[in-house]
Length: 136
Image (cartoon, rainbow, N blue to C red; front, side, top):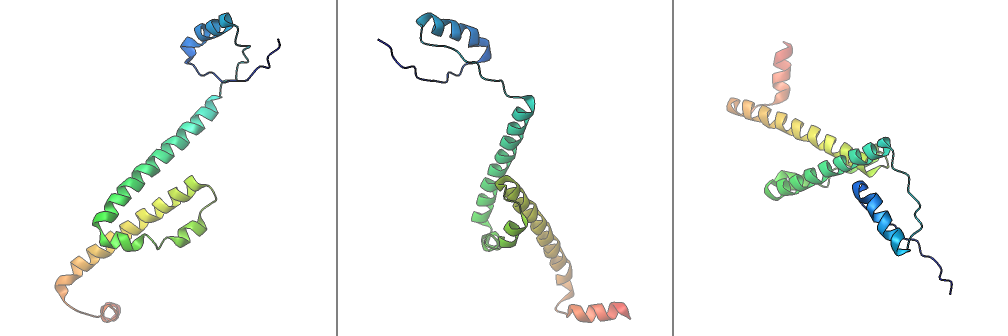
């Protein structure tokens, strides 16, 4: 009786490869076709993408925690539409661009908060008047 063969992929550690093949050959269930080992460049690319995605997940988790405690952050989460238009179609690149923009906005917010804190002791005044006085 002739039975059609089915293709399976067996994953094993490299150090166990020879022993695994020997056992499977002994059982008569395998005609091995070795797969090409991925190139170092491919492995490095996948590692970098994994690292980028891990960083993004960590940032998203931190951002979610921050949004729970910061009412201003809750408002700003819907104001990022223009960042998506500037980014490429690559989701990782889009997320990186969004995080970079978020960092820039956060830094600008700190600067404005610092400026408000520094000028608060001066009382209520019109910034245009201060600008006019500076030019005189």
